[in-house]
Structure formats: structure tokens, C-alpha cells
Amino acid sequence: VTTTTAPAGLEPLSRSPWRDVPAYRQIIASRLRTTLAYRQNVFFLLGILVLQIFILRKVWTALYEGHTTVDGLTLHALLVYITLANLQNWVLQDPTISHYMYDRVREGQVAFDLVRPVGFVPQMFAHLVGSSFATVIFGLAALPLIFFAGTLGAPASPTALLLYLVSFVLGYVITTLLTLMLGMIAFWATEISGLTMLYRLINQFFAGALVPVSLHRRRCPPVPGDDLHAGGHLRGTRARRGCARSTRRPGIVDRVADLRVMGHVATGAAPRRGPRRVSRP
Amino acid sequence: MSTVRVAWALERAALRGQLEYRVNFIVATFMGVAYQGSGFAFIYVVLHSFHTIGGWDFGDLAFLYSLRLLAHACCYLPFNQIDMLDITIREGKFDRYLVRPMNPLLQLMTNRFQINAVGDVVTASALFIFAASIAHVDFSRPHVVYLVLAVIGGALAEGGFILAVSSLAFRFLETWAAAALVDNIYLMFGSYPMRVFGTTTAWIMTWIIPVAFVAYIPASVLLDRTDGLHIAPVIAYGAPAIGLIWFVAAYQLWRLQVRHYQSSGS
Image (tube, rainbow over the protein chains, first blue to last red):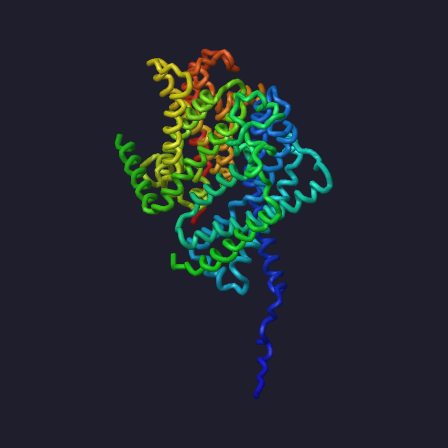
């Protein structure tokens, strides 16, 4: 048995997962700097968010005229929900990275990303994290303005705050995976701008940023005690206590299962198959 | 007339170019429907739980929404490339427009075609037919004439404001986000009765940004709701003219801003 040693300077690289961290840190920092450099755009996009929150506050206030609670929600609670949901949606939904991926693929620059020693998907993930840092900074700076345009309040309890933070992180993971998956479609389709916009709109509506998701479900009978629906003259929204089977809140098992399915699809199928579709532009 | 013929030929060529990407054509058209439909879906969902918004019932709001959308579709069909001005300037493509024997604004408008405009037209037409069947609108001849003028005036009011904002690209080079903000202002404020937003906002959305003249004021006239308006009825009847005034003013601003164009040299 003979053993050989690699010449000096050509030793096999360590497979430590931390090996690529400095590279990711560089990508995160450069994405953060890029977003800050084009801050005037972020200000205008922030303006759209503030306007949307303001309009939703006015519209929901007009809708609540003469009612104290709807679906068990007071006006104040609903306005806090709407403000928070829109702010969170704005922070999490950054379309620039899927556009960036699409541009790289279309113009052939993705080849440079693919030959780098760090993986393509982790690179894009680092871009997303950098971009998220920037939007969080802008979102936090805009809080006084958002407070003025919408309604903010303290958490109901420390437990509620903790659960919110956990769900926020899980929401961030899902959004990130979906954004990566959306960007990967660029390997198959030459144009994805329409699809990206479509995804954002559908996501905004069904994620409950405009209307609480409970109001989407209207096929159940009205709920006794709900002061809007007590008269029975309106088609009842499905309130929390309405239909036992379909209003069952998803448990932790359901949520983890959803996450696993999405995670499998996003991190498994698209990123592995997407880069194989690279062709000369 | 020859200018119109050339512009029309360029527009058709731009449309044919976009039709080459068939999947994107379908997706973008569907996106236009979803984008405009999402606002209506919001109204539909909440009005199944609540009766009215600011005293307007579902039929009235559907009519208001469809009128705004019709004006928007009429504006967006020709003006869908205006917000590309900033990238056109940055990439030095505006130089080409200046050396050709045609108005640069017309060249910009016919450079490409944004497919989701087709979705806007489809949604606007479908919603208008639906809203007209459920709202209490008197379609007498004067009302029909007013309706047509109001849609054109609304399109000019929206197009004028977008043109004014986009022309700032000659100075600031990047204005797409500002144009997106304007688009959202029209979408969000134009779809509800102004009294919902309070006196100050209603005044701003009437006299500073002409949102109310696009649909709210014409819809109030056609639905015989002028009593609840925040302006005199005689101004409400003249709403289409306000759009024309806005557009002429915006075009003058464009001409002033073009003088500040500096080529990127690339």
C-alpha cells in the first residue's frame, strides 16, 4: 500500500459547513449595500405600503360603522392585524431577487455564478437575506409613519409575542423558498416577470394582507353572538366557532407538514433541475 | 396622419414581438386580470359580510370600480411604456429617439408593448358589463355621451399624471418606483367613495392628484349621487375636461424636462 500526500498548497479543502460563511457574508453585505444605494426606490415602495395601510384603515373603519365586533374581532384588533400583516408582507416579499435571478439567466451571467466554489442556491439565499436585512432596516425606520397611517399596539402577552416571532421566522422560510423556486423558473421560461407579479398578487390576497383569511370562508351558517351576523340578514362569514370540521385550526403537525412539502419542492426539485437547464442565451 | 400611421405600425410590431413569447403572453394577460381583479375581489369579499362602504352598496361600488378600470385600460394601452423612460435614458437608447423624424414620446410609447394591458382591457370590459347590469344607472343618450367622455377624460387625467412623474427621469434617472407609487394611488384611492378617506384626503385626491375625476365624480353623476359630492355639481359635469387640462399641462412639463436630457454616452 502506498500513500501519497498532496503537494503543498493543494491539500483537499475542508468540508466544514462553515467554510463558505465568509463568501455568504460578502454577498449579504453587497446586497445590503446595493439596496441602500438605490434607497430612493425603497422610499417610494415604502410609500405604497404606507398608502395601502392608510387606505385599508379608512375602508375598514367605514365598514365597521355601527358594529363593535365582526367575527369576534374588534375594529382595533383588526386594524392592528391589517397594519402588521401588510408590514410583514412588505418586509418578506422582495421581488428584486427573483428578477435578479431571471436577469442573470437571460443574459448568461448565471454561468459565472455556477462556476463559483459556493453553491448557486446558497448564493441566491444569501442575496435574499441581504435584501431582507435592508427591508427590515427601512421597515423599522418607517414604524412611526406606519403607526400614523395604520394602527399598532402592544402584544397581548409575552407568549403571544414569542409565538408571533416563531411564526414570523417560519413565514420567512416559506417565503424564501417560494421566491427561490420562482426565480428557478427562469431556467425554463425566457420571461418570468408576469409570473412573478402574479405570484405576488395572489400571495398578497390569500395571505390575508387585505382581508383576514377568516372572512374568505363564508359558507358556514352565521354564528350566534356575532353582532354583525346576529340579525341573519347577511350571508354569514365562517367565524371561529362556526363549523367544527372545517374551522379546525391547523396544528403544529399540519404546519410542519406544509413546511416540509414546500421545503422539499423548493430545495429539492427546482434548484437541482433548474441549473441543468442553462443554455446559451 | 402619416405620424399616426407610423405609430400604429410600430405599436403592431411591438405587439407581434411580445406575442413571440406565448407562455409569457398568457401569464402576463392573466396577471393583468389578477392585478385588477384582486382589488375587486377585496370589495366582493368584504361586501358579502358588510352591506356598504361609505353608503355605497355592491352594485354602486362595482360600477365605480369598473369605470376606474375602463379609464385605466384606455390610459394603459397607449401609455404602458412611459414608466420605462428611466431605463431608456440610462441605457442611452433615448439618443436614437432624438435623431429619428418622429416625436420622441410617440417612439417611447410604441417601443414595446406591455402584455398585461390586454388583461386590464379584458377585466375592465367584463367588470363594466357586470356592473352595468346590477347598478342603477340610467343609460340615456346624454349619460352615454358623458360616460364615453368621462372614460377618455379619466384616461387623460391618469396618463397625464404618469407622464409628469415619468418625465422627472430626465433629471433623476430612476423613477420606476415613483411611477409604481402613482399607479397604486390611482388603483387604491380611485376604487372607493372619497368620503371614506375624510375631507383633507378627498381634497388632495381631487385637486392635487386628479384621482377623483377619473371615476368617483363621473360615477356619482351617472348614479345620481351628486348630492353627496365634495365639489359643486357643475364641476362634476365638467370632469372630463379636467383630464384634458391635466394632460396638456403634463405634456408641457415633458417638453420642458426633455431639455435636461443628458446622454449616457453608451
